[in-house]
Image 1 (tube, helix red, strand yellow):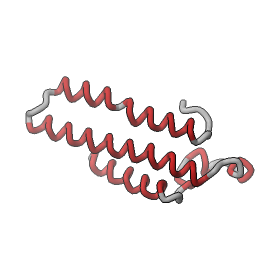
Image 2 (cartoon, helix red, strand yellow):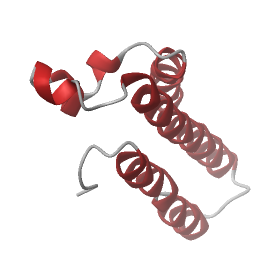
Image 3 (cartoon, one colour):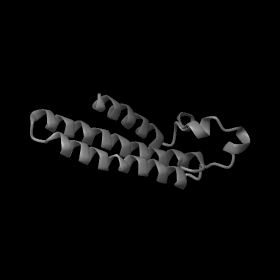
Length: 107
């Protein structure tokens, strides 16, 4: 399941990094045309594409950690510790992307 999520995130990331797909971003797609005029859509797509790529990499890492856990080489406590600590990385990437794109707060 994590690999499927990572695959979808990777495809969305490629679309955003290419400069297209601004309509996929919730804040941009619901903005009025006058609000969209104040946003650099290509820059927004690029920044959110990087953040989405970070999330995809995290999903792959978590899938690999779960696989190693299933093989018995990693105990459950270490899996939760590494996964929980690593969960801050994609959250921070999305917050920084929201701030850098100047689309409001990251709350």
